[in-house]
Image (cartoon, rainbow, N blue to C red; front, top):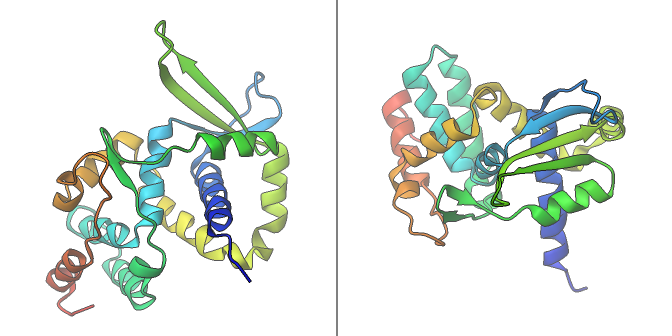
Length: 218
């Protein structure tokens, strides 16, 4: 039986982007979008969070870096990073992204259009007087929120995405899109990738950092 990988990829993209919007949005109770209950402002944050979801080795790198700058549970970080590599996530879960002018980026317009069509989100794009988009907002509908609340426990096939979004939110949820971009640009492999080239993995760098921080090999 032939496998339509483009359909699988399309499905993954829709799930991943919606979960990012859902788990990283904040409560909304405005009148203008009265059918909605949550909102996430700015596409930049979606792109930077998507990069962490699609590149577990970069997430592991950022988690180890937190051990150097924040008062957090280092044993927990050690366990998380070890699990990421034991499960071979940097190979199995990796989904490459190209680098554009502002870092890792992939067009999500079709995904957003689908989510709007099925009633999961409302999308607003504010433009300047030259019709350039200067602000994008993504509103989660009450209907989508109810479906998520009712089905989260039964989403076994999607549990990895749910757990990973919650993990990233725990450690990086308060970061703006710009702050996440700054963090990612501090990594040489990311920073030195040429325009429209795929950003390479950093598994060996993570293994070295892990050894320096925790005194054992991954």
